[in-house]
Amino acid sequence: MKAILGFISFVLVASGVTGLLHQWVDWMPTFFGFSRFVIPDGHEVLGYVVITLLGVGAGLLSDVVKKHVAV
Image (cartoon, rainbow, N blue to C red; front, side, top):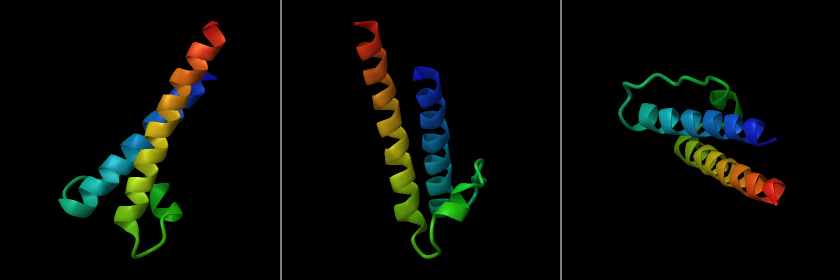
């Protein structure tokens, strides 16, 4: 479970950060193209911020699962 949540966290954070860099700087390609199908047109920056925060939350959840299972 921890490995799955860690992978999901990495994908979401990487997708969100590269999407934000692509929106602001316009030189970074978006590595994970699924995010353009999830985010509605006109709300790209907010969508990438939400995806990044979901990734951080999944990473924190993987740490909680690790501590809970270890007990």
